[in-house]
Length: 188
Image (cartoon, rainbow, N blue to C red; front, side):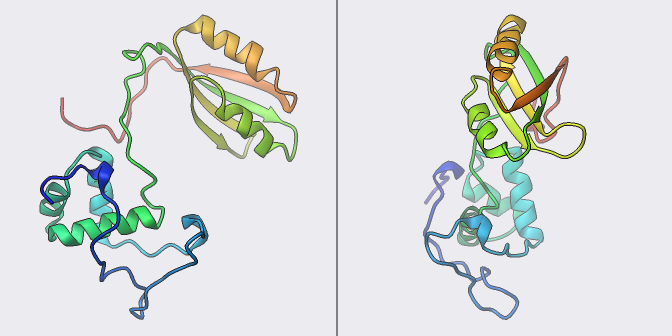
């Protein structure tokens, strides 16, 4: 396996580090979601791998192995374990939304009817431009990040789509004037 891209890393090499403190392999029934299994502790090499992949999700296994000073087989096994354990949820591209035709971004706070989170979340997931949805504590219940082509589209999304959801009691829109991705690749 030469320089495979991380997006295709799956299965394969055995992992002698994937046990608990007593050396027993942690396992669950095959249909158990990763979040339902207790998380295995991450060591310094795992954390270095995560940091590298956050910076460059396209890094090859060989590159990751060289940069964290382990063999390719060890890097491959660790990455697969992090994926299987649900620590790594996937690989994606970071988008410059303005250059991609979405020049208006906003955080929208929502107050919703008590116990309606699941229903509201399903409707928010279907919104065009929805990028992040979080159930939060404080003065509002939900924080929604959206990217739209322009302010007119943003206004329509808020006034027509969001406020039409019966469980949404109120909204507040916070326009994003500038943003910085703290996990961005440091290369120019």
